[in-house]
Every structure is written in C-alpha cells, then in structure tokens.
Length: 87
Image (cartoon, rainbow, N blue to C red):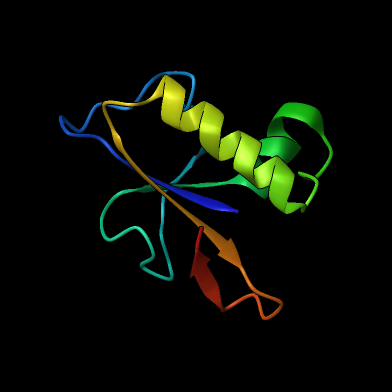
C-alpha cells in the first residue's frame, strides 16, 4: 500500500517524517510525499505489513481520522509491482 500525503502548508507531522520517502520515482503522488506501508512497517516493527485488504482499510481509516486536514490518497500495487491501483 502506498499513501500520498500532501500538506496544505508544506508542513509534515514529526511522527511521519521518518517514513516519508524522498523520491516518488513513479510520480504517483504528483509532488506530494509518499509513504510505503511496507517500509513503514519494517522500520517500526521489523516485519512487513500484512498484505490484506482489511489491514489496508484499517490503516486508511486511522490515517484519515488523524490527518483530516491534509490531502491523503491511497494506492495498492497489483501483482505486477509497476501496476498501481487507487484504493
């Protein structure tokens, strides 16, 4: 799962800064910052995020509640890693 995070004032919460990727090589986020659920989980828990839709839905719900003032968009990758689907 990929989370695009666009801040209205270019301010990003400190708790998210360690997980924001510097480069959006596939240009998914159109200038916003990108967070990979896989990388986030590996940094926080040392295990990959469970790749199940119900887990992604819970993550999406929690992030939308916590960061309601910012523009968030969510994507999942298809079986082919280069396929990105809005979620």
